[in-house]
Picture (tube, one colour):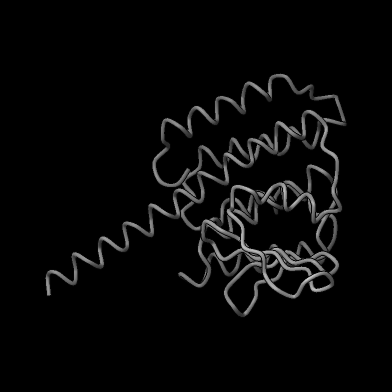
Length: 209
């Protein structure tokens, strides 16, 4: 989902379109499902190398519930736009997807912090989910255990919904969360490919010296 639109991205977008056709416009209970599907389709068809477009899409939809999260979103957009390589773009896209999951369930973290350690931290009560843009993320709960638990990014949706209070997903919400996981895998894979390309370039440069 980074760079030119791939065949897998096209297939993913088409899958979102088919689901959108099944979601009735006048069904208020499925309104949030429809919004998340529209975002996933946007992500699949948009060249967004720094994650700015994903974050801006959320801002333009005015779906965040309070000023604290709106301010946090503006800060993320500013950092993603202004500071090269301060935080991986994978972290910004992952953050955008997690905000959409919060919107899907209408249960939110209290804030998202751009931390001095160059991470994005989702905080709710004593629990914090930490994104650094890699293929893994960390979670800590200072009330239960001060240490960090490091998990694969592919498991973040289950962990994230648990941190929202163990929300129970409807059938539609489960389908959408599965699609979000696919999108997260694509974002992480793109990050791995970029890191591999940078390593190869560094080796070639060293060999040329």
